[in-house]
Image (cartoon, rainbow, N blue to C red; front, side, top):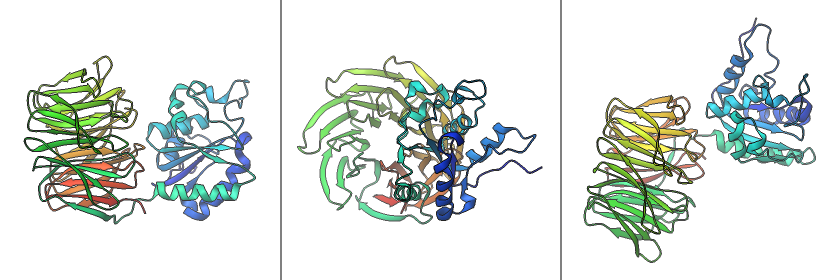
Length: 452
């Protein structure tokens, strides 16, 4: 009897129902196999040999892929089994297992809406598939298959390709140690915080310095709003400040009892999170100045992160722990530990994944709800910075060993290593995941092109 099929890393899995989208699934398979090779495209896992555990077969086939295409036709939600009930409600349904496995293993899932089928709402899906409703969908029709397939191939090429030799797109030379960086969501601006006590705003396209803001002592942390209008900076003067980029005006200031070590903002910069030696993390309303939440650690808070909606806060501390908090209630949701101080922390967009980096030379990825460790990656020195890619599939880390590295978040597989002349203090992905920004004690910040 043959072994259960498994997928090579980087492959594409096509999930579909025969009675719903088989007319396009076969054509799509041929098109993708022609472009990426038959060994990289998988479908028809329901043809499972006798005696094999179908859940294990699906886990092997889906878990090794980088992208799952969920073909959703007009009958995808309502297709019934032998008992007359919707198949999707059956926990053992192949299609459900395929998509659930992909979501659980952080495989990118792209809904492909076939022949005008609507995107299912969260309330229409079984709870394990609810996250599917938030995935950006692709539309495909029988009448325009050729054009649609070509467009999908281009999108998949971008999704699958990490350049094995990323190039430096631009280098910003500050002449002082770079302690922090941030990228605006619109992809236009880089913000740096450096040892000379300044936060500087740079145009990515031209490399020009657009604005500069100063603190009374060394700059330790920066953050920027998605639209690039507001910059937050924190420093050794015990303050976090919010500045308007266009006018240079200081909008509001927040005080800690000791050095401010880390900053983060939500998508609209309505909330600012700050961490400090004092040792607390605090969440502030950037309009009223009101303190919305406060989290206490047993030692300095070295890193903070917010979800895009501002509902969850992550903190990293020298007390060897990272924690996730509910901002509204102030309650602790998750507690995870390293073998030494935790220096950095990151959340995915919706607070489902947590990344941490520590003095124990590791970067790790955790599931927030359960606190389970999903992946582990190692440096040759302390890890000082971590970031999760916009879709949660990639982990970036920077460390004392002078490198920034990009890993698969689900497995810890190292994809690429980027070198600086000294320790890497900060890393940040662009909103489209195609670039990585790094900051270093060598006095530079760099923009690397990860994907061609």
